[in-house]
Image 1 (spheres, one colour):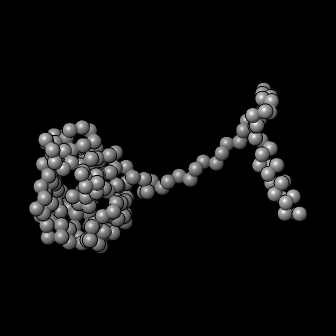
Image 2: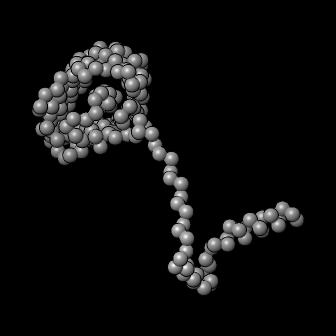
Image 3: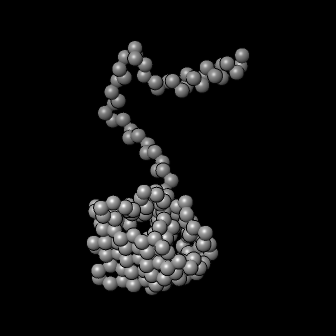
Length: 192
């Protein structure tokens, strides 16, 4: 019996502010009513966890997203240590990757980065495969092992092989001509 009284009490508290269809309309609050208390803000997502860009290959739908200190996707899981090193894995290559302004090396990866006013080139080897990535305002070319992609920008978020063929959809920061480095390179390596 006591349990039923507790349940009925809880129901009356829960429905106390509920307006039913046959109830009269509630009266307007007095003009001098105290302001309502502000709700507590939702917990903020740490900046290092925010994803600012994404790369997706079409028609395969392989994807990798990245933020200031992370790169995540089905084939990649890397975290910036803050000391010029990224730890984790790209596909089956795991370990520590040392990153400088002109080079990414480690874990069977050796890439050289070159930039100029027209774009950038990144080339070297990944797990014994020759890699050559070139991006400029009009096109994106990638060679990864025996695969070759020669794409043109067909919309702000899409590089595609004309007239038909593979494509790379880019989102957020990856749409720009100077995306985050080395995050964008790591994301490309994971999806190509």
